[in-house]
Length: 351
Image (cartoon, rainbow, N blue to C red; front, side):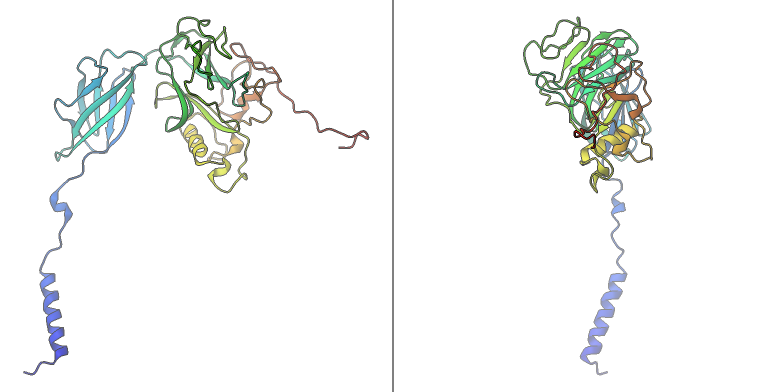
């Protein structure tokens, strides 16, 4: 039989396709699970036990757990996608690192290092009570806390920002406070030797702005608060549970077309985290600058403050700008409000 060139090509192509069809496609699932477990987050319960969460069930690789500074050998057990680590002898507010290796049911391993703060069973109820984000050289930026109950500040963390994104933070050392006490945090210290964190006496610290009727603490290297936009938040430990927060902004939803009017991705993200953690109310469901406290009118001596009763509705309604020299550090807040002067008028009385 005569076969043309075109017929020969067609026959060879058909034979090749037939051969390919007989070979099964390679399936990567044939190798089984080859992906190591992914660490998600660390939680601390009311007894100080750490819960390490993963994306799948895991177990501890024997003899890989290390705690620094050293603690008594922790007790470890796995449940579902969590690994629970009970470490006795934690010092309140102390920072520890935990190093370990885990494996999943297919034998894939993952090594990790996570940090945690020594468990404090006596965290007091605290509010952010007053602040000056527009301080001066003589009156630097301050944040005041008010203790509603007694307890120990150990590990309590004040952020300029939120746990996921912050500019400065202060992790408090152990300091016992009584109900009604005030705690003053200096966000722009001079760095002098007399700027001492007060843990035994309210008068042991010097420095610009130190207050004899409040516990003074200093954010080392702090450059101050944002003057126009910002979030200040308070948690019971680094990355722990929210105690209080404030959102302030002089912008509007129309300030720009991106970042919800806040002017930066960081401020928007911090505002969303504060709302998500239950520390602020967004009137329309999506947080906007209009939900925030306006810092307009505030100065180094005109603070942003709660009322004298320190009401807390997680909204701008709790706050006002005090009159000139109306800041009340280490004392009950004033209910007096700053009133902007009326527009100047000419000699005829016309605007």
